[in-house]
Length: 412
Image (cartoon, rainbow, N blue to C red; front, side, top):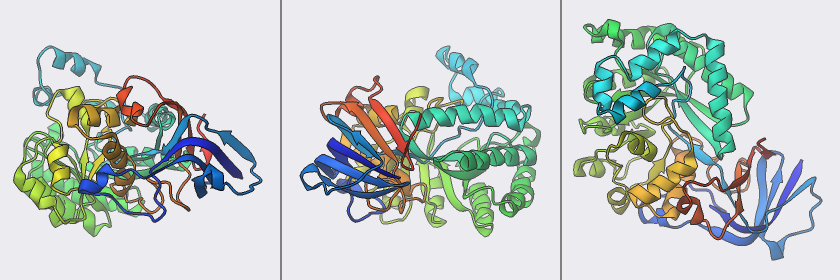
């Protein structure tokens, strides 16, 4: 199947030579071609260039993109979209004055989601989750990482990971599964933290590895959740089972989790709302991607990741949605990009780089996703008629997407 997109007003994120990520001042440069064409063969990008250089092509399908922008699909490297029910009551509780930690301390938060998930059938969880997945695909997400972490029991965690695996098998979108059994300490283990960690290490991990249910391992390294010492023990165990670490760190406090991530060559450290100078310095010259989750800051009214300081220090930065029922019940990466510009003072060029090429890096898929590069997946957003790509974050409340292609096919 040969598809040709013609008369593209501007083709964004063009990388003739693929790069893994962009860092520091490089993030301000978004390479583009104006009045462009893009050629797709089956599920891959096969060619691109200026319209005046368009060769004679017998295409099976031609899409006229006059007045429209084309860019790579978003790569959302941090989500929790497999869950049961919702936590809308907690949303109202926060409006009435309770904060995230107070809600958690009275049995809400992650433990609330765990109770709902363990009382829901695997089929029902799958059906709820696929609806969310289909929605984010229509909103331009072409690759997504999905975490477990609402089971907090052996069977609950395995159930979540099986649902993630089934979604990956049934949808064209690229999905990476992450084991997050260390999301919270279950109430039954409140006086026996070691017992729950032993269950993660000795019961959950062997089953996950045996059934190849995850690519990564994650830990919520935070005051009131898992200490640095506990985080490192769990990460070490995950590495022994072939799972590369990605870590929740610095959401509310800086307790040394970033340094642990770097120590174990974590693919990414995520959240980063609270960053010290030491944390920023620690990330320099490492292979670990910093990932910001601005819609979480928006929803919880907590600080935003200090993007300007981090970029000025030469760091790479990725953006992700954190789609979950408690702190970010949205997977709209268009809103994430806009919020990064509005609240974190990232330029549109920086934000698009962060949500495409750097997002791909944070998922370990830079070779196939994140840029307009020959042989990469034909995962594309075609906008509506717009004046410039600055309009994408500027018109933050509007849906400016005309169509989405994943693996060369339009998402209906």
